[in-house]
Length: 446
Image 1: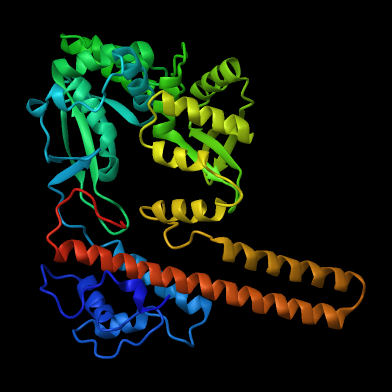
Image 2: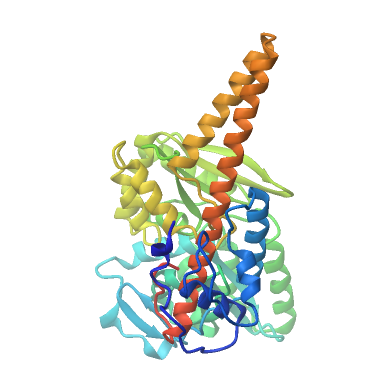
């Protein structure tokens, strides 16, 4: 990608709003530095550092990967500007947002019934919520949910329904976006717990404890110990399920996956414990005849369970029902997938990859159609080499192995260069936030 890829970079030296290693790096880029270009004319005490982190024509894949590792380390120490407001469904709200600011005329719920709201919120809270004791005296419980600042709409749903507050949980740092937190305490927490408990499963027992929190110190100690214990095992209390609950739980814990640039998709929900997944599986089978598969999964030392839906028609039907039931966080992604065809599959795959590339270790490493084509060519060459060797044609096998090695080297170099380039692009956008005195609500491209 050429210098046009850095169109968001300031042209020339801009006013420094604060010291930072990334500031000088981006000044370097502003005068013509790219992942593939010259860094001539760079000034500043760290100019040489960033010349060394930009890709040079002679770099091997390993060399670029080392540079990328250093860039990531520096990026991990680069703060976002302080967030003072957030956006939810077209409206901007100040931080912190207190209960006294509530106005029923600005509700995002429209004509959704209270029962449907509570089912959805119970599903989401089962996925991403937490119940904890308040203070050293254990005077009561608090309910909390943390979300990325660009997913604030779901926090507004809880705030509008149960009051509480929305505050900044932690500022953004590098690839990690700022986090917001909805919290409700005191009598409002008791009421919220009492309203959510009948519709929940995973945290139903925790919510019932919070709703009936005792007044005497000895009983509070006992309930606090019970609350801790409930979090240590599969304490889900399966009950009647609904599409609203499914939508809320999927918004919190679900994932839509697409076959590499293909027109097929799968739905996935991962949890540490299986009870709630069994309830969802049984509900889907009973309402739609959906054949969902529950599997144990292990990643490193962490064990979990995954509910999969593979059949394309089942996936589409489930998404349609959840959208009608109030799917929020994953509504746009779901609507894109419902329009998936063989003709637009690659475009949708690229669009979703771009939107989902920040905030995790996979930033800059998402594969595209050209990556998959190169991988197929490498695999083909390796298979041919193995077949030639099996036939005793060692000279031809050696030549084919050499061809596969060249293809693999080129593939690794392309991917490492692209990652380097995207890291610099991200830095440029992060710098623009500081330079424009950004304090919210949304940061384009981040």
